[in-house]
Image (cartoon, rainbow, N blue to C red; front, side):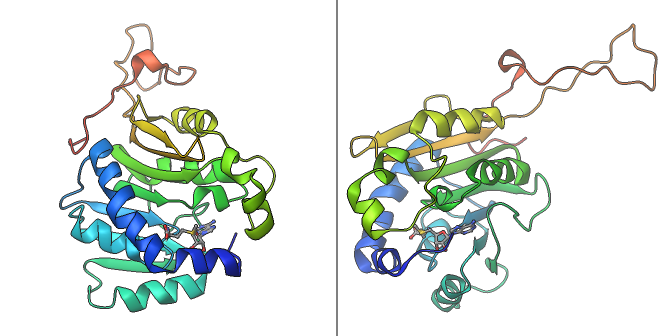
Length: 236
Ligand SMILES: C[S@@+](CC[C@H](N)C(=O)[O-])C[C@H]1O[C@@H](n2cnc3c(N)ncnc32)[C@H](O)[C@@H]1O
């Protein structure tokens, strides 16, 4: 859902930019590394500060930036006008229906947007769908702990039902085969969760001798012991 007036004022100001540049970006880089020369998506890009960080600090080759709110995308386009279409594409789109083919991106960044999505699990599913195996998901999220505070409930608009704790968010990532494996930290008494997950590559199944050629052996999902986690920046 779109931000209300109060949250827009909180997001579109120099303090938010400072926090994103000086605190969140360095922490995400420490947890997950850079994305030099890679194709990156930012969901909920707001006014585009994150895109600049991805291009300049993280070294992304191209960033696709999406936001549900046309007014935010207009602000981002103005800010990012100096980067040509070979570096940035900005679109009005929802994180629950990302306009990108399956496994087409090397990294996805989420600077505080999934807690705004009523069907947040669908957004996590979309992140996994567009990531190539070995691709990284960098996230900074606001937990149910923060959203239950009087200040959040009184001044800001968020979906009320089915919000997530740190544990629930990480469990949902793992359910979608995005392995976090300890690359996660909580901040401010559990109000914020910051981390990096890696899209797990399904192990190629060796054809079984007892299955006739042309048929496929079907298994009930990929067990954790069968997963292969690739190192950050590594090729699939
Ligand atoms: C809290 S703001 C964060 C903006 C920016 N990422 C930042 O860190 O300053 C959340 C942003 O997500 C956008 N948003 C909310 N729901 C969305 C959805 N379903 N898909 C894409 N963007 C969404 C809002 O319009 C808003 O710009």
